[in-house]
Image (cartoon, rainbow, N blue to C red):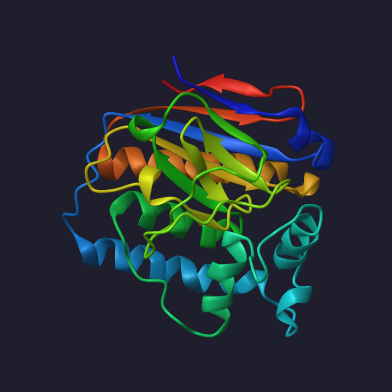
Amino acid sequence: MKKFIIEEDFWELFPKAKIGVVVFKGIDNTVKNVKQYEELILKNQKEALKYLSNDNFSSNEVIKVWRDAFKKFKTKKGARSSIEALMKRVDKGNSIGTINPLVDIYNSISLKNALPCGGEDIDTFAGDLRLTKAEGEENFITLGSEKSAPPYEGEIIYKDDKGAVCRCWNWREAVRTMLTEDTKNAFLCIESVDENRSDDLDKALNELAELVEKNLGGTYSISILDIKNKGILID
């Protein structure tokens, strides 16, 4: 049985963080209606603008809270949280675009709630998935590259027995585990470092689960990991 485990070295840095997880089994992630997802993302891009009320982009709380979090561990120069990357495109009036249904759905939920969302194919995991500090030698190949770019020692990463799954917490993922149209079983997560947004996290998790089930079928379970609940079964 595969597990998702958040290690003690993560909690030492982020004792008030919460990681929401939706585990989906038996979905159909093939693309059937691109326009449907284009419209969903566009709708939630407009919703996202309400979180950017400050003209100084980095001073908006949903951006600032993650910049502060990234200062607590070593990161690749220029690496930002996934929610900042999405919000910056919205702020500049650029379209997010579609990839595949699961990714489009979690991007739309991320935009609507201004929380980082991500996902991986459970069937590609080698052993347990862990959120932890990197040793610095983990194999990591991202989209568009054929060369491994290991994380820095002490960098917060998701990893399994074969290497890093996502670098700089939620900055960039490995090709090896990414969601594709062939994905049947998915690990979806929503992350929060703002203790005042627990209700927002709950809401976003339920929206994510319901939207995936409605469009892609399958069955799901929702869990929230925190310093008192550090691991769950995912397979």
